[in-house]
Image (cartoon, rainbow, N blue to C red; front, side, top):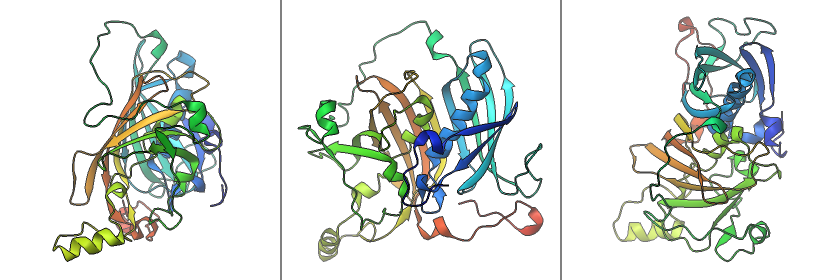
Length: 340
């Protein structure tokens, strides 16, 4: 397990061990956490890895689509992923994956009934993207609506923070999000001229220097769910709003946690096996209301091709909920489990 100050490479943080034909183990590390809870996209990537390994023997290692339900908070330490074959086909296969923690056993059945926690349930459609063929038509999609993204960068200049349109994002240490250690795993670049607070454009790469692989798309789709933070009022702005008699949306120093309830990911393009250095993100919400938000994340490669689309349901909770005491057993006799 990585310490709070250790950068653990993504490939190590998602390393799996095959326990039997349908069971895989992984150790969730601290450096991919928000507070005490591993980032939802990071855990999703562990499940994507297991699914790819599970169907490698039939050549269906690519995730076409995945739907994940986050049932309760995960935590650092050992986890077991058990896969059920729902329908295996020549072109598409559907599998179900469940991630478990707590009271794990060293041998089959690997979990302890009424004690082990079922934390994430996922349905995955698997395929071989290299064999796709059929009708292809233009759609005129671009990142020009609702606002235009800056031109694609000169990546050599971007790496040295010299691109004229994009600048490296330096995360302030005093920020209310400083407890989100998972942010250290990526290097982010923002437009030098921000035209809106409601549409977030970024270029991103791994801080470890690793390439971004297909399995990392789960994490990349959830590496910046901070649309609320873009509208955080500064102390000066909050004071001015109060003076004008306007409602301040939340306190400048309020510390939030944005737990994922549902994450859907559809892969549009296969990444090369060796991965890519850069991805472009466009993140936006259509409604932020009553402590809940939707999140649409578009992921594009260096050439501007759409790689994946992800849609999330997130809550907006006080950060104390992230570290609150939790039940240790799923037994109905011991009361309900703390879900979020």
